[in-house]
Image (cartoon, rainbow, N blue to C red; front, top):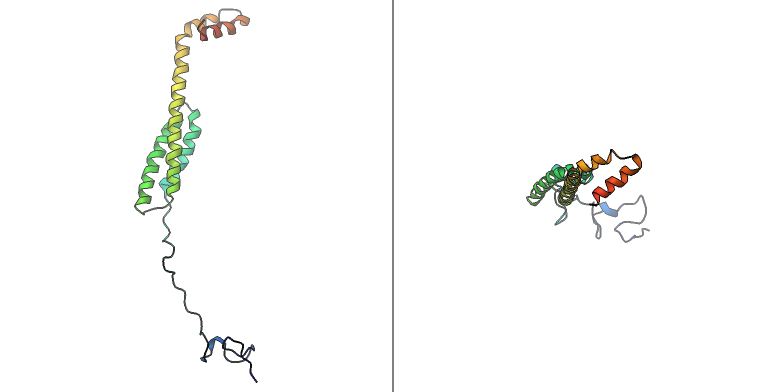
Length: 156
């Protein structure tokens, strides 16, 4: 007496039937894999210019302490970022987000670099205008030198 297990087989491990059975209700062996309709797009290549743009943009933010040196790196970061974005739009590379990050950090680096340069020039201008007066403070006793320099810088 054989019992049907509902899957085309007899319910036992050793009995005939099952997937390989040609009887009614059997499904046969699973087929090969095929790509799903509208599957994932082909992977894009790494965008070295986008990575370089982001790295230089970050370094430009750190380089603002070097009297505006970061501004120069920021300009390079912006140029590389724009070129990398162009490659992304043409479908030649990926990582468009890194390119945008490089453009943004590069632009911030340029702006902060300009601010640092303006500040350094402003301070240098103040000291160059008052250099002779400040040097005359050095002839005073040590306890009066600091007050002399402060009075010159405050415009008194």
